[in-house]
Image: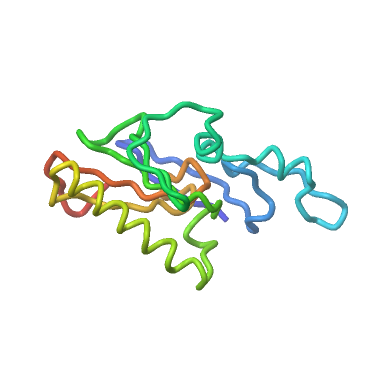
Length: 156
């Protein structure tokens, strides 16, 4: 599958895999075994950046944490306030959700609302990026929460 996206005046063309099982964390090919399944070594190498933050292997500025979520300040903020609400359960994209994940995803919005209230913001934007063509760079479900500046519509 080919996807195109425009970044400023540059058009990027991406060759996307036909099957999610064919890719690793950042859309790179994963090692497959003889049956066409990801090998154990490929799965072990796919610990996401956010999994490493949750495990405290990588430092982050943590805004909130409980047993299901961690919220951190984005290292490349797109607004004066830019938090990432991250599910501790590893789900690569919105396309990988199951009906059993509905409460988990709803809880991400509740965490976002709680944090924005604590920070004194009642106007803010929440965004999920889903897939390479939508600029998702870490394949571990996370909700961007942005505040502190005016936002335009349409976005992007």
